[in-house]
Each structure stands twice: as C-alpha cells, then as structure tokens.
Image (cartoon, rainbow, N blue to C red):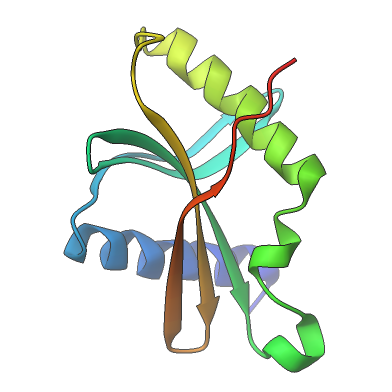
Length: 119
C-alpha cells in the first residue's frame, strides 16, 4: 500500500471518529495553490481546520503531532484563509486548528493544536 492510499484510509478513520465525537464534517481534502487541508468541520461552535497525521510506530517515526511544524501550520493557515474567502465565511466566525494523531488503533484529537499564523 503506498503512502497516498495509507493517508486516505487514515483520513477516513479520522473523519469517522470526529463525526462520532460531535464534529460535523463540511469538506475533505480541500486544495488550492497554497496547500491542502485534510478535514474541515464544525465543532463546539468553531469552524475547524483539521490536519491528520498517522504513524505506525511513535518510537521509530516520531510523534505525529510534531510533524505539524511551523511550516505546515503556515500552509494550513494560508489555505484556511482561501477557504473562508471562497466559501464567503464571515471574519467573525470562530476558527480553530486541530490535529488528529493516529497511532495504529489509537486516535488522539488535539483541539486548538496551534494558533492562526497571520501575515
């Protein structure tokens, strides 16, 4: 199984888990020239931009959440700006950036994993 197939399968797992835990999924794999956001949903009154990271083995591959470094955060924020513009979402809307870390059968959701990075 290639990395794209593994990634898609784990995004499916994450989306299902999020839905079962109170998220309403709006979009998946939103792409533009600045980047991609794996899952976009609503939870607890916030528009959530969610990055999914999978690791087979935390000890060998490192933590999934650490892979969402400042460079990746910046790309997600730029892409979220574009999403909000295209979808005509008010600037007053509460925004949150979450990370879903998957380790085998374990799923950890980090709500508000990082703050918006503006210009």
